[in-house]
Image 1: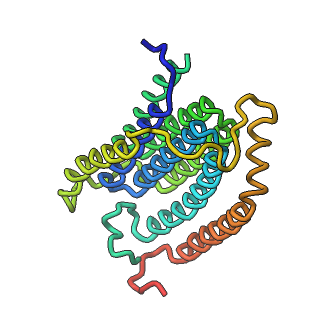
Image 2 (image 1 turned 135 degrees about the vertical axis):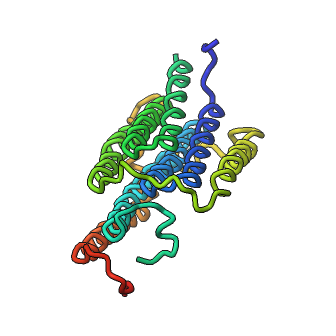
Length: 104
Length: 181
C-alpha cells in the first residue's frame, strides 16, 4: 500500500491543509502570541509549496525564494514580539480584542 | 520508503499544526509549532533542498521557537486567556471559511498540478555534482544579489524597530492616559 511514489500533489495537499489550519487558527484564537504562531504556520506551508515546485519544475529559484521568506519571517518575528512585549507592559494582557483600536 | 517517511511526517505536521491552534497553553502551542517546523525540514530534505532544510532547523526550529518560548515565559501569559468571545460569529464563521479556503487552494492546483516552464532560474542539481549549497549560493550572489542586499536593509530596520519598541515602553511601565506622540 505504501509502495507508491510520493508525487508533488501529496506535498501540495499537505501544504494547503497546513495553510488552512493556520488561517483558521488566526481567525479563532484571541491570544496574540498564538495568532503569531499561526502566521508562522502559514509561512511554512508556503515554503513547502515553493520547495515542492522547485523539485517538480527542476528550478533552483524556488529554494532561493524560501531563503528570502525565512529572512522576512525572522525580521517579522523580531518586530512582532517586540510589539507584543510593548503591549503587555502597558496592559498586562495580550488579548487581541483589547487592542482593536490600534492605539496604546 | 519515501512514502513511509512522507506519511509519518504528514501526520506529525498536521498534528503539530492542530496542536498550535487547539492547545490552551501558549507554551504547548510553541512546542507543537516546533514539531511542525522539524517535520517541514524532513520534507525539504526529501525534496533535495538540503541548505533550506538546515536553515529551517537553525532559524525556525531553534531561533524563532526559542524566541517565542522566551517571550511567553517572560510575560507569564501562559495561565489566562479570556475565553469570552466578543464576536461570537467569528469563531463559527472561521471554520467553514477555512474549509472554503482549503477547497479553493486545492481547486486552483487540481488541474495539471504542476505546470509551467522548467528550470527558469537554473536547473536543480539532483545528482550532487556541485552540491546544493554551492548552487544556491551561485544564484543568490548573482541573479538575486540586489534582493540579498535588500534583506540586509530589512534586517537593520527590524533590529532598529525592535530596539525602539523595547526602549519606548521601558521608561513608561505604569500605564498613562496620555496619547502616543
